[in-house]
Image 1 (cartoon, rainbow, N blue to C red):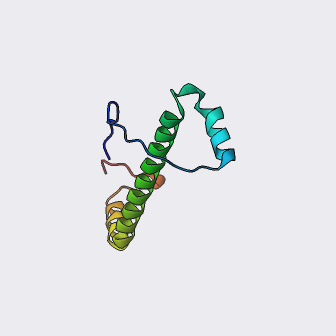
Image 2 (cartoon, one colour; image 1 turned 120 degrees about the vertical axis):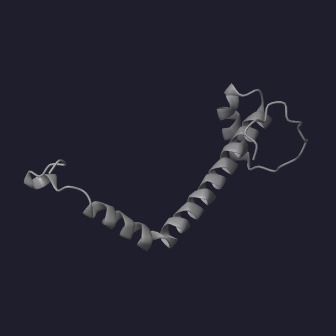
Image 3 (cartoon, rainbow, N blue to C red; image 1 turned 135 degrees about the vertical axis):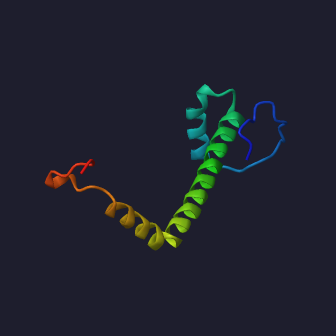
Length: 92
């Protein structure tokens, strides 16, 4: 999805919304030029959230798939660190 949408050509469409939702849109859209701009902004935000959720799911699946190896690497790195709790220093 492109980041910039200023100046994108518009396509007229028709949607059906419940009356209570339309009233809420009218109340919330006072800082927008019109309903269409408000609805477009809302849909863009919703689509962006869906895309973020999908990416987060893919990332989590990737991390989980490699969790055992990553955890083993982390444990290995920790064995090379000095134990500063007992007065040991990095120069010893």
